[in-house]
Length: 255
Image (cartoon, rainbow, N blue to C red):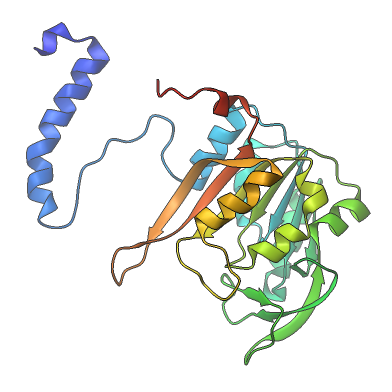
């Protein structure tokens, strides 16, 4: 039977047949053998590679929730000619942001929380990589400067088309509201989305999809899914959005 299949199909069929008994044994321990995706897998690096290979035009990247610039470093591999603006509210990351700016001549950063207006916001800075902005003060929060993506793009004269990345732990809606002009000239969005309502007003992943649809975006990819340990439920992932008139959405077939 294998001889009647083309070489790659035969190898695939053989691999599947070989994996079945091993998966039966490993399944008792909670493990499974899965085929490695030829498109690079579900890491952030692989998803950015797929975005670049689609020919998405990006001249400026706005990285909100930039921390020390780690995500922007990955994005530079695939969009090396883009300008970068890193937006981060936690001052603990300023040394890393300063180093990134020194290494990347076309990069800059702003120490502020992004939102829907310029002024101040409340910010929980207790976790350097999990900071949360809020319009409501709460115990343990500090006040930090706030800005909007539209304000930064306009005052810095950043050229479009844009890519916007949000790692903002449930504060996405105010940030997107403050980016309406920028989104009109954006080709790519990368948003950390959740399957649960993290706090009042936070959007779940399908609600973010609904919010972005009339703005001209549709989901095209995802990476780094996480499952919460208490019950194995899907917790979060990073979701990629393209313009909904992109060529990818004009093909409805699988192959």
